[in-house]
Length: 138
Ligand SMILES: [Zn+2]
Image (cartoon, rainbow, N blue to C red):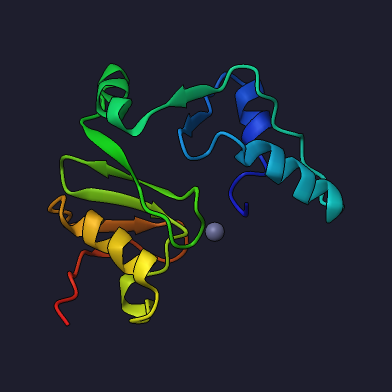
């Protein structure tokens, strides 16, 4: 939610909002949350959003000139996803850094296992600097 406040404003300037199959209800939840918290954002409208299945992400990205895919990486939130490019870059959003994930956080551990299964070499989180991918072998 801390990265979505400008989404509708960006859409109004011509950007597309891609909603993955696990994110369909997210804009309405965000709009309600911001209204409840009296945080002033432009509500995200359904019009113009691209709805995408994970299995279609590689084809969709190829049309944008990107080689890679989008995978579900729940843990921080059920609707969390990671963009993985074939050059070894992973854009992990708000997923907790692997080094901070506790043993009992099994969903997040599995998300990191999925990311590392794609031979990722560089992690680009939404908070903090880019860093090398360091698979945890404990
Ligand atoms: Zn964040």
